Image (tube, rainbow over all chains, first blue to last red; front, side, top):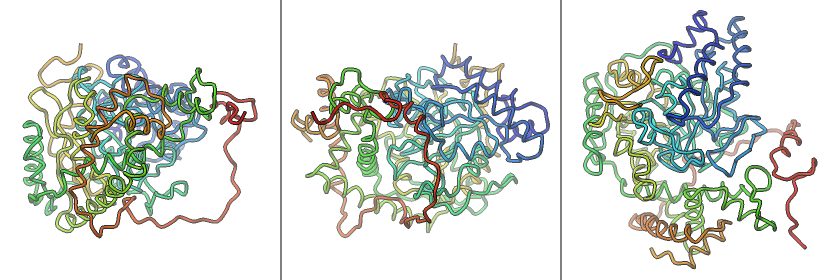
Amino acid sequence: MFDMSALELSQAIKEKKFSVTEVVGGYLDKIEKNSDKFNAFISTCRQEAMSKAIIVQGEIDSGQLTSPLAGVPVGLKDNISTKGVATTCASNMLSGYKPVFDATIVEKLEQAGMIVIGKLNMDEFAMGASSETSFYGAVRNPWDTTRTAGGSSGGSAAAVAAGEVPLTIGSDTGGSIRQPCAFCSVTGIKPTYGSVSRYGLVAFASSLDQMGPVGRDARDCAALLSIISGPDARDSTCIAQKPFEFDAKIPDSVEGLRIGLPSNYFRQGIAPGVKEAVLAAADEYSRLGAQIEEFEMPLVDYMTSVYYIISCAEASSNLAKFDGLKYGYRSEKAASLAEVYRMSRSEGFGLEVKRRIMLGSFVLSSGHFEAFYKKALKARAIISDTYEELFKRFDMLLTPVAPTTAYKIGSNIDDPVKMYIGDIYTVSVNLAGLPAVALPCGFDGDGMPIGFQLVGKAFDDMKLLHAAQVFQKHTDHHTKPALTETEPALGVGREVLP
Amino acid sequence: MLVDDELIDYLEELSSLLLSKDEKQRLSADLSNILDLFAKIDELDTENVTGRSHPFDNVNALREDEVQASFERELILENAPENDGEMIIAPMAVS
């Protein structure tokens, strides 16, 4: 069962080849066996999952549950609220916190008969690109455990790559689903802003955050996106009219699709292996009948700055609510009310979170508000308009996800500017609220995975996943991470794991 | 951009944090480099551009008032580091 896609697994359950408890129990056993290797999960919920598995089995047997992913286990990034189950955001600040409500997507997953089996490791409060800022220790890349899994949804990608769970949910504020997918050779989509309710997602930057699926292939992601998308009265920014529809038919053509390729993304600052693999993906689309046209992406030099100004501003505001009084960590040394606030926050938050809160405070402070924050909002408008113009010429854009493959744990963590610049290809997508799917397209000389992304118009999410499915029908890069029990170690022609 | 002790102290206060000496030293170097990166947007011509704080032009979502159950108080109190079974306890703010 560990070799099957999520859709195949659900079908096998419906055909009584496996029971839901066998599947859920099997994956939980695998997570426990692997936990020291990859550190992908912060916690598992065996008891709740096994009880739900029995209920779901009954509903499948009675014909009540017909969703294409019924019975399939799913992992959630630990910034997604789960009622009664610890939700830490990988921060000491939320130690001991158990939400009193479920996120909307948790309700939707349960209605579709999916079973939450655990909460996934991540960068603290989703601030980071390597899952190293976690209070619970770094996530390790299943392709080479000395390297990062990317971030901030490093656990979501690593767990799928290591075969610990068939599908996960991540969140993407500036590339946090797509970059770990590229680093771990799995597929994921950052959906259009407003297509998936953010109710119950612990906010980092509210105008940029969006949750989305991570899986072994684009088809599984499409099925999961159809389940979690759709309007929600509890999130006024959720503007979806209806959920995306999953097309059970396997798509087979990209004939005539107009794909834009930003030439300047490949000119400098990109590792040669990444450049080669991403351009080869464009060639593959061309071979499959798509029209590839090169163009110059404007404003590239400003995107990272605009993104970090806005996201830090929103973060400093969103994280003001963590006061040590209502839930989570409270300093034992604090005596006065002011000390409770300041000491709890100082002992509870890690350095990267403090850095971003302070940067946000700076750009919002009097004297700097106009020059930084307001200017960035104007730049954001220009970036959005630029994309709108591009989509008059192209159906989608094909770009790298990250300039490099996964780097060694500890190698970038002390250089925030270097870390931030690594987000150059992903952040503008969030600024414009667009959908983007990341999928594998090869390996570099060290055997580390490479991914590319397809960026589309707002609400063209299924069109992107359609194009990704066609690519995966004709290539096998994505099939390599599907681990089996007998093949625990990955790596292209080399020993990776002990 | 120069990030001196005075600015770090000001941001620490605004952010409701208390930083150690080591943290202050490290953050002042980092913040200086990051603010240089931020300052790059100064080169952009944004004359006559209206800022956008949100990806799309949202229309406010309104609905009729409905009576609904609120969260269970016991569960909320379980999360509070200090409570008396009815309310969350905070240190006295006014002496």
